[in-house]
View 1 (cartoon, rainbow, N blue to C red):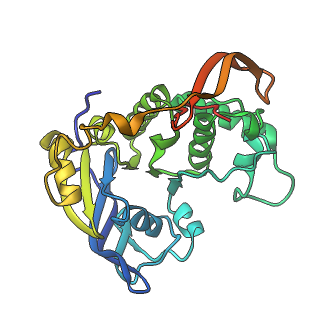
View 2 (view 1 turned 180 degrees about the vertical axis):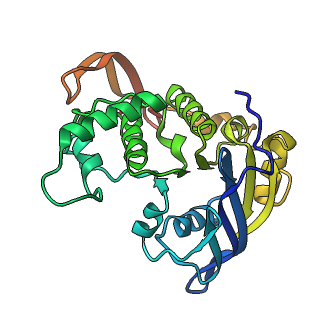
Length: 306
């Protein structure tokens, strides 16, 4: 995936200066400075507890900073709630989705929308949802119920809901953590497409290969402080990892294993050619076979594990 980073003349969509946020004795953000421009994907990386989600929650109006200045499209703002942030075109896609499972996609997107009094025109909303999905490559069926959708499809609904509300600044908090590799690649292509159409995209992730593939610029946080902001073309995976943890990481970490630590016992669970339909009536399992031995941890990856 290749892309040219936006040059300096691109206006700043968001600008955060000296942002400080405390929770009791814990300083989550310590005078952080961060900006992201129209037309770029700006990645925000750091270890767990580095302050990434707190900083973006301030941008989304969930938290109020104890100190510092926030500007959106050049105007200083003081968000008192997420509603204020949404009104300024800021939307955040969280790791845990906020959807009503028994409602359709259209009903979820219409829920809580600002507008006039009276009955919602769900047919109009459905047409708008389908048009947004087609425009941004987010394939969803407006009539489908949330409980029928895979995790990746639910994420698309969250994105379309923000687009339907007019968001032009989109924050994604670890969006690929719940996706299959194919879904992740599709999402990264969508983010690049949004940036090309003039959106400002902030991408929070631990997956440095994805960060380098999708981002124009990258900001590293460590222990609540800004360490560095660099172009994606001006760094690499090793440099980012060192900036995140403050030291070199041993390349042979965890490569030596003791054979006796992985001895397993007899088979405790066996499945052979398992077939099952999902809640939506379509085939969910088609010939699944696996064995689980005593003393063993078996990982199950992908969507549809339930």
